[in-house]
Image (cartoon, rainbow, N blue to C red; front, side, top):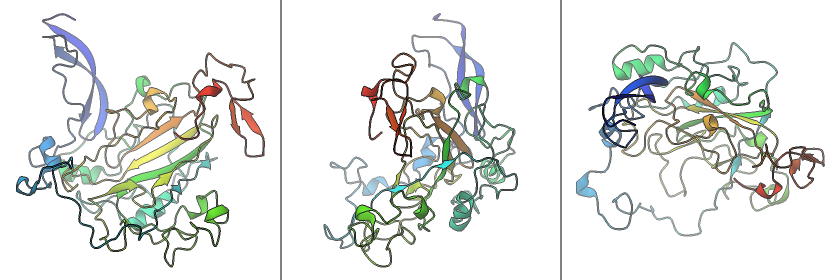
Amino acid sequence: MPSHGWTPYLALLSAGLIAIPIATAVSGGGDDPLEGLPPANEGAFEGGTSGTDHDAGEEGIPESLLLGGDIPTGGGASPLFGAQPFTQQMLRFEEFGTEPMPDSYPLDNTPFPMPIDSHSCPDENELENFLNQTMSPEPTRLCNDLDPNPWKTRIEEMVGRPLNNTACEGRPPGEEWAHQRWAEFPPEVCYTTVQAGARKNQGMRDSHQMHGYAVGEFAEGGLYHNTVGAPPFEGTSSGIDIRFHPNMPIQDERALWTFDGTLPPKLLMARYGETILFRHYNALPVDPSSNYGFGLHTLTTHEHNGHNPAESDGFMQSFFFPGQYYDYRWPMILAGHDSINTEASDPRAGAPDGDGGIRKIRGDYRETMSTH
């Protein structure tokens, strides 16, 4: 790299609330190739008080109340509201539950519900109805930058200007972010969730639990058949609020964000050799300061220990904005897929086929993991 002059680089720049790849000219002046590039999340704070990352913490704890000590935030210990140890059953994971890829993709689905203002998440009942629909639009190899961000109106109100070329999908457009080897690893199963503020669980995923609240400790009379250890939660998660003990207050939607916006925490059951399409919607507040001073409303999701292509790996700067979704495609392959056991003849490399047998797959069986 020359020490002076101009050097072309590819940068990711946020235009409004959509990440787009652009070619930019960067002034060379040192050994750091990133020197002079704009922040990767430029635009994420547009419309805030200062338009900088300071806005994300403006609702934080005042410095006069910071106590220092060993707590990383510098704040005081959380109040327990009289809760005593071992007086609340720990919640078990709730499965997302995968479904076969749809045969068709409805054109008349209810759109991703828009919040009433830039400080809120969508209505919880509207979110529930939205998640119960068949996936639509159809996942594609290239980013869907044709359909607009359904929250365009709310975002424009926040930033105070019209937006051009918004997109419903947060994956950047073009071949560089296309799903690699799409024809070789087409999605076989899928699931959809939203990242949303705290809301009451309405039992939407009860029917997706593999145990069906009828097997082992989840069966009637078992330790986990009652999901919280108190009536009326027999064989259901419906009605569970976002709090960690009955004595503690229900959490505000701006204070705690989860998959589906609910508890219990979520679990994905997957099989090697069965490609997954994970559609992740961002239902967080448009205003980046609506977070009680912690976190930011841009998301990226990483499937730990998976051998996934870069565009679906959820690395640090591969984020998407409120109102958008991101289609992650996980091939669920073993390491060495292209170089070891390429005929899928090793019986040690495989996964259950759902009929009592083993589906043999390519790759190194020594890379098999029961938990990612």
